[in-house]
Amino acid sequence: MELRVSALEKASQEIREKLVRVETKLEGIEKTMATKAEIAAVGTMIAELKTSVAEGMVVQTRWLIGACMALAGLAFTAAKYLH
Image (cartoon, rainbow, N blue to C red):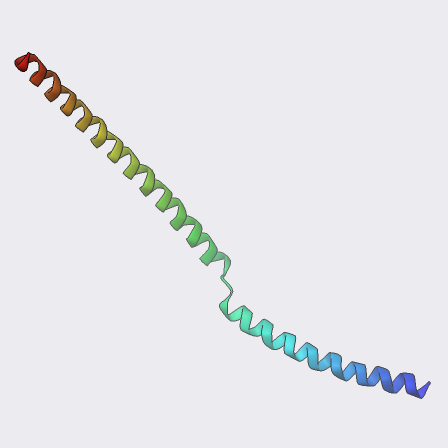
């Protein structure tokens, strides 16, 4: 019985040492973890970026359509006078 108790005491000491290491690692992780507010801020930034990209695509599409119409007008005008 005493052998079993001494084995349990030894195992208990090893478990305590491992627990201290785990707690130390968790303290380090907690320092670098993001808070809910920081995660919400990142979500807001992503939404703003999505809006900005969409607006950029609209502007680019308008310029492309305008340029195509201008080139088509020039082509038809040139064809009218050259033919």
